[in-house]
Length: 217
Image 1 (cartoon, rainbow, N blue to C red):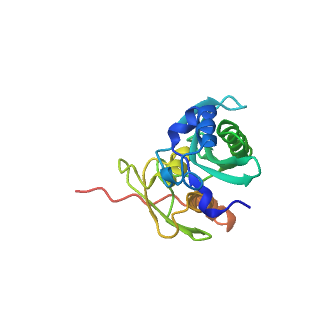
Image 2: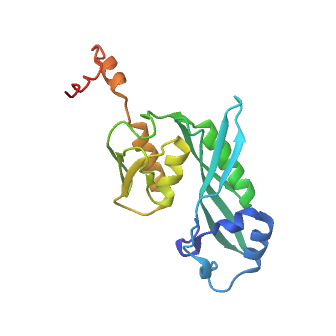
């Protein structure tokens, strides 16, 4: 098990050139586990590609973690990548990939996310109702917003909401700032969403049309 002090978040610029990144890390940066760049985090890069059904999917790398193990010949590095994949039409998935190289970790994370894509209930450009979800120490609150509000959220929560297709929402992260737990809490909250007609149908009730406002004189 890797020492916690030798684990760090890798800057997203290093994702673009995996081989160069790993070579630089293997040569060492000074100090234990390369602490000089610890805690750096950038916006999740977005990659577009076609899914197996011909639909357009987007892939976002939320964060990349590096762990090192000290062995007789030096240090061995391993990487884990947390990836979010969605079609911006109500389908989103989360995957975690691990490998000895950054590029392989991202590829495996993307494949895992595509296998675990699920549907979430959306109402136009926002969510149908308020939802509060928890995962370990992370707590996330999501509230519907009027058109034009945009996504009021941090980088981690925003990656999940954008991939799912939410364009107007208010959110607040109330607990741990751990990226993995925040992403899972956000995805858990989206999976709790239910449309009005679905609730009526589950209770065996007839869906009634909303009463229209009386016309003014």
